[in-house]
Image (tube, rainbow, N blue to C red; front, side):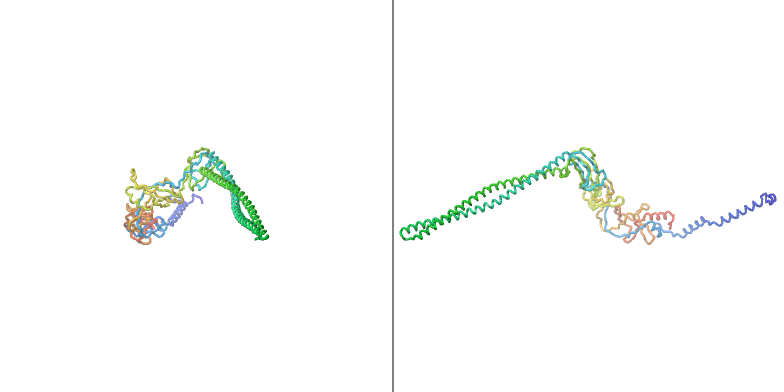
Length: 488
């Protein structure tokens, strides 16, 4: 069939009209089969608003999921001891007792600097190496004093040995004196017996001439005299020997006395030598050096654990005695100087401690000094606080806003500072009345610190307030106040 033979409707071929009708039917079916999402969503939202239960202003309803997602935490309100507090500004400073200036204790030339500014050092660690001709001379004097002391000690030992020999001689001399006394006594007795024997012989001879005594008696008398004379001669010999021995021992003893005198002189010389050693060693130690070492160099060491906060010397530099080389600081404890207005001067005197917070970490210190006079320019009162700086986060010359804590009066309700929110210029907290239901509660504030706030009016003991996530509850509260409704 040719195209010219196809039916024509209003000038349009019939087959074209049939295709158009089929496409239109297919498009209509596809559109009719899609769900009407916008209309359905609008209907659901309309139904939700119809089911939403309106709450009075200042009340918030949250689901368990919202409470968990917002990290809401509750705290039960209790009465506790009142604590007065007020704010002040302060600046941190180094504790002078924990800051050390390392100086050159002897003039010399810097051979090497072993540390850099900002470096942490330990006590005993080397800091600076110095070369000093004066130190070399002092060490030489010390070594010379050691040698002289050794010689003096040796001479003292020799003299002491001789003195010990003299002590033995003195004992022998005393024994010789006893021998002389004994010999003199024996001789005297022998001479007495000789005298008696001599007179008896004379008497017997007279009697023999008269015919009264016998020849035998005469011989006996002569024998007794000869025996007595022999004893005298013997004891004379013994006495002479004893006296000779005594003289010899006395001579030796005199020599021993000389030895004792020499011992005393040797002892004095040794004592002077030992004193010279101590003095020479003290001179070297005063130069910051080790006396037993050799040469002209010495290494200055850190007297404390700390940080090098200043370095004022370079390698090759010549320094005088007393010149500043380094400054070390032990930052484990710092001073905080605070300035309190005149109106708070009395509260400062009653304050017990100070609290400050740096990088979310709290530090508490004790007030150790309050200036007895006001500053005439600023009309403020200065006070010093000692702070333990665990971790070393605090730095000298930092400024800080601090809370001064002191004794309050009676009992008070306190809440964490995070529980406090401001709505329309009014300080409020959110009280949990039942699970998921929170009520905005205006409060009247007393004293405050960075962590807690004293509540004078608005809360009762036993109530539970939102301490974490309070800002989220406030946001939901304000959304409701603007008529946006609460989302669940």
